[in-house]
Each structure stands twice: as C-alpha cells, then as structure tokens.
Image (tube, rainbow, N blue to C red; front, side, top):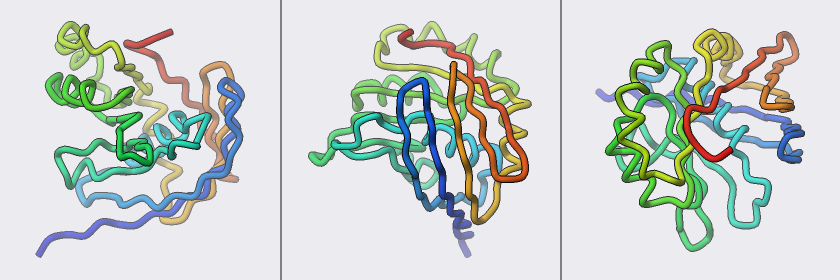
Length: 185
C-alpha cells in the first residue's frame, strides 16, 4: 500500500521591503512521505521569496516534484499555461536544470544541504549557458532552524529586508540570509 501525503496548511503574511511585495498567502502543502521538515520549509521559503510582484499572470504554486519527475517544486504559469518561473529545491543534476532553463522564462534553485558546496563545485561549470538560472544557498543551520517552525497548521509572518528574511510563527523568529551562487545581480 502506497503512503499518502501529509497535508499542511500555512497562512503567511509577507512584507518584502526589498521588492515592495506586501500580501497574505494561504497555501496547502502536500508533504511527500519521503520529505522532511527542512525541505518542506525550504519550499515554503522559496514560495515566499519568489512570490511575484505582479500577480496578473498567476502566482507561484506548489507543483508535484516528488510525485511527477517532469514538474518542479514550485512554478508560476500564466493563463496560457506558459511556465514563467520554475523553482527547484535541493540538489538536482545539471541536465534537469538545463531542461528547466529551456522550458521556463526564469529558473530558481534553492539548495539547503550541508553538502551544497561540494555539489555546486561539481555542477557550476555545466550551467554557464543557463542565463535565466539563479541559484541560492540557504545556510544549513538556518534551514534546520526553519524546520522547527513546521506544523500541520501554520501562521507565519515573513519580513524581508536587505536580503534577509525573518520568519516568525508567533513564538520564535528564524533569520534566514541566503547567499547567491549564480544569477543576475
């Protein structure tokens, strides 16, 4: 018998002062049985930090990356089903990122594992043709701290200023400062 996803719900108040995005986001997160809290919360962080300034062509949504190999962790599609933003989480191979680069207007990768520097050293030169790719690394200590906020029902306030995100659940605040490994300034 196949294991089913665990459903999580999050209500997020976003105040991104860097990009002037101020909104409330309500999402349902299907957590794959093999996914841990750290990866799930990194997906939530990617959703918030990638939320479009202009939502007239759709919003960023969770996709079925762990169920469907041809889908990312998140994506933004317009009303013509064109992929505007493809978001990966973890350490995918270069072929997957190059394929995504050809399918979407913009591709973002959020890496969070402690092995990211080793993985990145082996893959970085293979991605030089992907001009629409941006790669971020969330420091492991910060992604692990973010995982402590995971609940089946979450109310989060996220404030972003000067490249740092503060994620608050009403009891504790986690500071996350991702570093850019590749991409436009």
